[in-house]
Image (cartoon, rainbow, N blue to C red; front, side):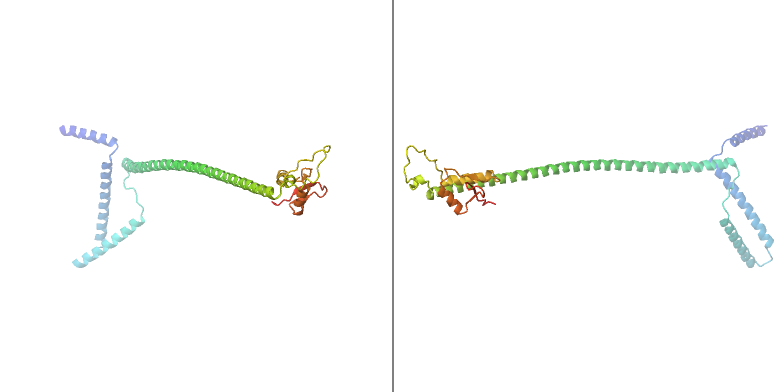
Length: 279
């Protein structure tokens, strides 16, 4: 009675285990058992073939022949296995499902590992990209600042050069003006010394004027005549002629014309101009 009860419980446990999905260890064990059974069948077939082809030989010849036949059989089997594609040994769908799940789990772990590696590498690349972008932005800011500094320096150099040229021109003008004043003073001293007014020389008055006559115009010096001609030429170069009046002493006019210092107007002899020596 106990044995029947125990066998009933064992059968219940076996039925429960069969209804559940087999584990990977059980699936491997089952595959190994199937492989061993198939290998045993192959060994039995090989033994039968060897016994059928065996002939009465000596002990040494029999061993050699057996070894040769076994080598030929293994060679043929090896060739067949190379040509033959692998087949599924087990036909149990539960075993195949368990093994497939196990392989999928392995592939999943490998893919998760690859994904983690790729994500970490992408994260590092993103950080490097952000760092490079920040460096690029800083370099652009520095470049803009340098361009602005260069522009300001160019403007300062141009302004400084303009100021320096303007100051140099002003200095030259002052020098020219000073030289002009020096020349005019020297000319005035020379003319006053060598070309005085006729009244001062005592040669212009030869006859006394009557009281009823009007007094003559006040004569001007040769220095003043030259100043009038020079100013007229510089102020109105397009119309440099000066009209001769009574204040111009005729001998001085003739002196200027004779020495080519002054020129008469081609149509009006009462107008003269200074020769343009500066042109």
